[in-house]
Amino acid sequence: MGINWFPGHMAIAVDKIKKAMADHDVVIEVLDARCPMASSNPLVESLRMARQRPCLKVLNKADAADAQATPQWISHFNALKNTQAIAISAKKPGDAQKIIATAKKLAPHRNENLKPLRMLIMGVPNVGKSTLVNALLKQRRAKVGDEPAITKSVARYELSPTASLTDTPGLMWPKIDHPDDGLMLAASHSIGINAYIESEVAIFLAGLLLARYPQLLAARYATPADGEGLDAVGVIEAVAARRGFRIKGGGVDFEKAAVTLLNDYRSGALGRISLETPASRATRPAPDAGQESQADPD
Image 1 (tube, one colour):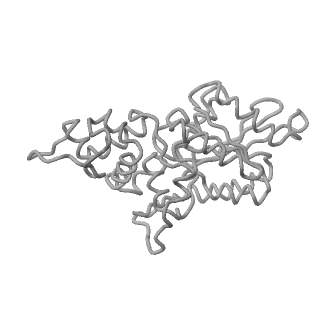
Image 2 (spheres, one colour):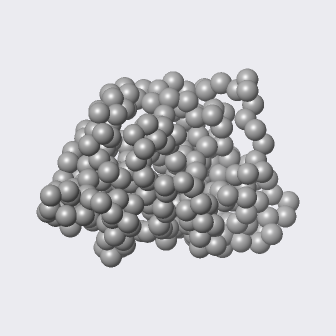
Image 3 (spheres, helix red, strand yellow):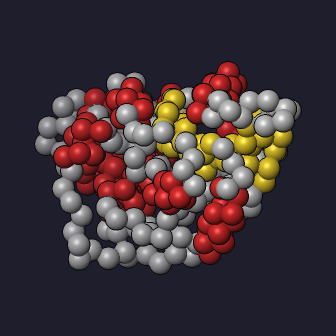
């Protein structure tokens, strides 16, 4: 299943960001630490490279990601030209302050009253960007919500006499090349629910968890600790059995169980999970060139 989601307000935002890029010194891209590369927007890279702006990759939700995978991603991004990466949880007040210190290192010439550091923050929807902005401002200014694409306009904030921050809407890109990236983003709630079928995303997630984290499934849903004898559909059926989800007539309520699995992953109830690592990314099969999206942007 190919997933693409590029609502009209995002296309408008791209034009505004293009113009704003010239007046900023550092681009801060907020990523989901559970799927850092899938949530890295190629539009951000092309826009910043056009203006030769350094990039700070902020792996947010690090407290929900696999503690062994995140350092691998930090090393991966730090090896890129003109790029630094840090891992944080925006809900921890002290973590947000690491961003300013790291951004200053990327633009050491912009750190005084006459030349304040001007930061532009970007990211796909629902990676915690607005929560991070509020933490940096130390007050609730940016709208926060559980649904993707809450922020729909560009807003500039003065953090101090020597630093400013411009917030941007959560931004996707017109076509996701690899279907797994769309599925990871949908599983992580970065894509509007109208653009995918929840049961199909849950089957993808179940298969991935079965292969990499069978012990977490066992702890939550009483499945075999090694996943023996299960497939992805069987995992969701096990969720239904564990929760007692039945439809009229006694059959398994597969849809309700699928949503439960997605919500348990998103909330962290399943445990610390990373959907990808640099190694898994490097070895995955190429996308099927003939595969087309099954959902239109809203």
